Length: 377
Ligand code: F6P
Image (cartoon, rainbow, N blue to C red; front, top):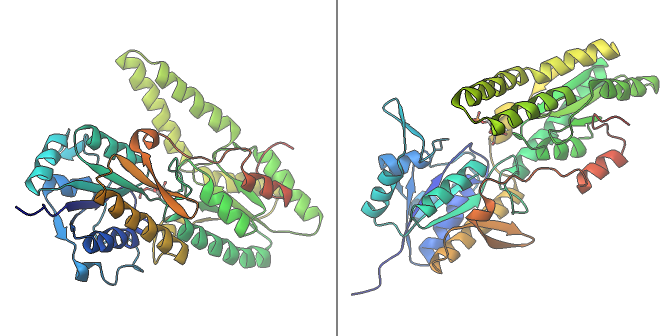
């Protein structure tokens, strides 16, 4: 009997990001050239549960390099906590059955932090799993970069450039909210590249008085406009303390009642935080007497064609992934390391986040060029 042809399953999970199709193509084209077969599963882990499939052949992989989003669709469904018929169920066993049914040798999961955790769980349940790091937030641990970030960074920077001319013309403060979840990479990068006067990130809780003082100083020197790049996860020092205390309360909670109470407190803080950027703009208007406006960049940052940097990164990671499959090397995330790639055990990646450290070069750079980071001087 001849050697069995290797069969790969592939899915994209979590929020979409530019470069997903380039990565699918990178895995697919390399796998086909190595004599393997590849099946796409639609809408994240749900596709594996509900057998929503798409055979990936040469023709399917053609013309997708430059296309935004994901041809497979995505979802935030978790294998071990999936809503099925209105109930939350652990679908790991169903996934295992389908993995056997489709005669898969491995599943490639393209995703961010949550996907790395879900993939590890499936690997621990006995499946051969391999992942690629994708997210515009750039917050996946142990990889130099995630694909999607470079494109989102360009989009956010371009927006700040455009906001400059209108803020300047109207002598206004424009507060631009940038995505990034709980990490400040996108706001910090775009803020530096787009010359924001103030950059606020979750890693450095801010003091609104200090921001106002920096803006007033600019006015004193004859510049009556300011661009504030604020990460969606940035918060004031008071709010950061409140979150911290609620999180600690949850960690310490032993009884169901205490857990419920701590969770409710956290949920209420989350809801309040949703209005943070608008509140900040209003506070700055009151404190500086300059008119303030808000621009929330939102999903524009995740859409459209990937930049060249993201296409190269996604293709390089995807292609290396297929090579690792050829060597039966599973249970790893294919990380970007310098010009090359490196397999990192999923155990080391799952549950960790790469955030901006206070001594990161970008922080020093921003301070050196006179950007206010919302801290007391
Ligand atoms: O992780 C990518 C991201 O765009 C974050 O920056 C943002 O906080 C989140 O996804 C939004 O998630 P959703 O697409 O579920 O609204």
